[in-house]
Length: 67
Image (tube, rainbow, N blue to C red; front, top):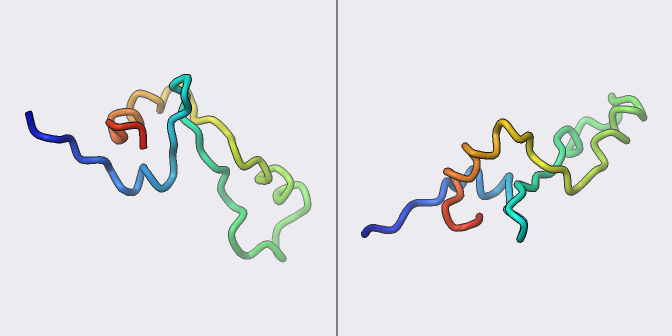
């Protein structure tokens, strides 16, 4: 059987944990931070957030070998 291809865009954004959860990094923390409020910057501070349960199945298809 042929190897499955990993979606490279997904592998840069998501990772699978040992328990099977999909880990992601929050957005809006890269640039243009001077224009954002303290609240916006603080809410994006979480580095290891988890993906929504509704998206998990799709993401796991894109990462057949665990990212």
